[in-house]
Length: 128
Length: 250
Image 1 (spheres, rainbow over the protein chains, first blue to last red):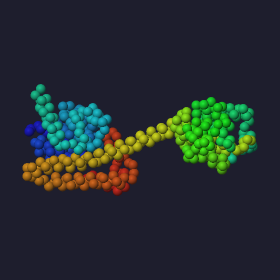
Image 2: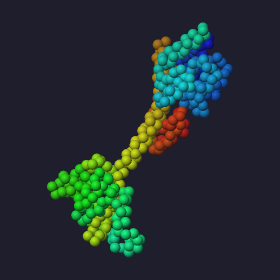
Image 3: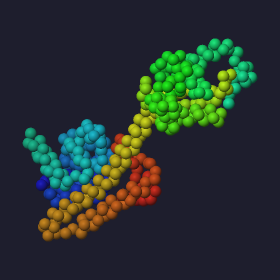
Image 4: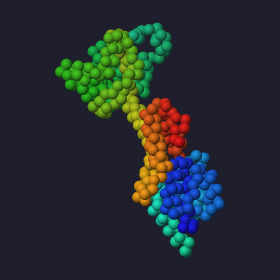
C-alpha cells in the first residue's frame, strides 16, 4: 500500500471525516486539509499524486488550487467535487487540469472506483 | 379645458397658421383630434403611419375605425358600442376627457389593431374648445417594443434569481446530503462486520438536523442577498433569511 496516498481538500469538516474514513478503510494513506494553504504545504512535503478538491473554498478556491498544484506537479491526478456548478464551470474545471468532476452527493463506491483507477494510471506511468 | 383663443397661445405663436399645422403634421408622435361625435377632425402623418394608412383617409372616421380596432364593427350601434368597448381604456379615457373636461397623462393600454396586431399604447388626452365645439386631442405612443424589452429584462432577472436560488439550495443541501449518504454507506458496511461507530450515527443525525435548519431558513427568506460562488453568484440564504443564524452550518 506504499505510495497510495490521497489528499482531500474541503472546507466542510463532515465531508473530510467521511472521505478520510472511506479511503482509510479501503487501505489508502489519507491526508486532509480544510484550505488551499494547508493543502499546498502537504503537497510540497509529500509525494501525493491523487487528490480530491472541493471547488468552493474561501481565500483560494479549488480551481485556483488545482492550477497551482498542476504547475508544481504536472503528473498529479486531481478530481473536483462540488455542491453546485454549472456546465460552464465544469468546462473551466477541465481547462485548469482536473481529471474529472463530481457533483455532491456522490456515491462513495464511485469515489473508491475513481481512486482505484487513478492509482492504476499512476502505476502504469511509473513503468514507462 | 384648453381654449385656443387664449392670449397665451396667440402671443407665443408668431408663426402663420399653415406653419403650425405643418409642425403638428410632422410631430414625431401620433396626434389626432376628435370632435364631439368622436370622429377624427385632424390626424397627423405619424397617426397615419401608425395604422399603415394615409392620414387624410382617417378624417371623418370614428376613432376605433380610424385606428383599425378589431372590435369596431362588433356592435350594431357602431364603433364604441360593442361589449369590448366597455372595457376599452382608450374609449373610457376619451369619454372622461369629453364629459369632465379632464386631461389624462400617459395612460397605458393594450389594443389589437387590424393592420399591426396587438399593441401596447400610451395615450395622453387633452380637452379642447375649438370653434366647431368641444373636442379632444389625443397623442398615441406605440410602446410595444419598449414593453417587450422591459418584459424580457424582467424575465432575465427572474431567471437569474431562480438560478441563484437553485444554486444556493444545491450548495447548502448537497453537503449534508453527501455526508448522510456516505456515513450511511459506512454504517451498512460496519453493520455487516458486526461493528457500530457511534460517531458516524451522530454525524448522520447532526447532518439531518442541519438540513432541517436549511429548509427552515429557506422558509424565512425576506430579502434578496447574494454571495460569490466560484465566478458566479448564489443566494446568500443566511443573509436573506430573517431568522439568520450567525453560525449556520456548523
